[in-house]
Amino acid sequence: MEPEDFKQFRQSKIQFFSRIKLKNIFPGEWESIYRGEGIEFAAIKPFEPGDDLRDLDLHTLVQSGEEEIIQRVVERQMRIFVWVDFSGSMLRFEEMLFSQKPQIKDIAIGLLLFSACNAYSPVGLYAFNKEMRRFFPARSGERHCWEILNWMIDQECKGSMAPADIQNAVSFLIERAFPQSLVFFVSDFQDQAFEGDCTALLRPVAKKFDFVAVVIRDPLEKEASLKRSVSITVKDSEGDKSAEIYLTPQKLREIQEISARHLLDLERSFREVGIEHVVLDSPSIEGCYKVLSGFFEARRRTRG
Image (cartoon, rainbow, N blue to C red; front, side):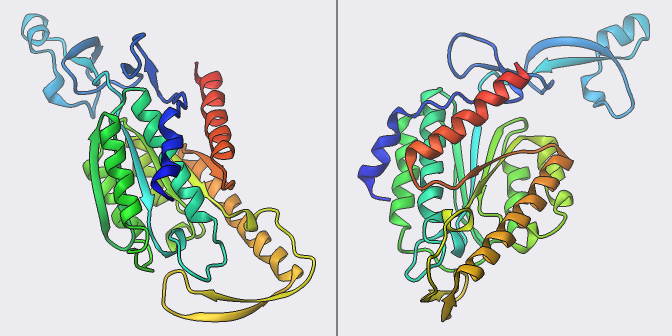
């Protein structure tokens, strides 16, 4: 996208609602339903196997011999991270079949970044393909958002058609992101790591973060139709080969059916590990904003 396009996101105000409850009228101050490692006292509970011995109430232990654990509130400010798939199928290049995925990806990133900024929440971004492309630690402010977006614009024609290393991206997330952060994983999920049962891959992040899968789909995968067959030249999204294909209405329906089955498999894995997801398949800012806002409004009603 061009710099002028991203200016439309400056007023984005998606009302994020997570497993972290709003505590104060000041936007951006949150209270987690989890107990964390902060300094603010929350509660006392009896010691149970598996509790961290460093949280033992030593005063009570000395006075009465009872083993109790001090629980503390996590930090008030909710951190938001956007983990973005920059593999070949999510980049712009000539002769790509699903040509609107990059546009939808950029819209999603712009909406999430500026909505976090307008809620006074620190936001960070990790871009990856087979290796780390760039990591922006979570910071507040519009200048930080523009730093990220300007980097994205600069990378527009520099990306390689490399596949994604999903396992490495997940490992880096677990290592570098703060516990209980709200994490958006933006990808088309068209990777071997997400074929079939991917619960083993997703379960660790589901336990540590409020993890939202943002599934990017091209409109062609959903409901587009052909009136007649066409010959088109397409390029391998994660390689350097091109080929001419004869796309018939029947072939397009088969592509859509495969995409729909893959989405059902993903949703099954998401449900099993307790991950929520949102599907973005509109190349318009208004369409993506409506879907994301609706997702969080539904979340607010079910968890409020």
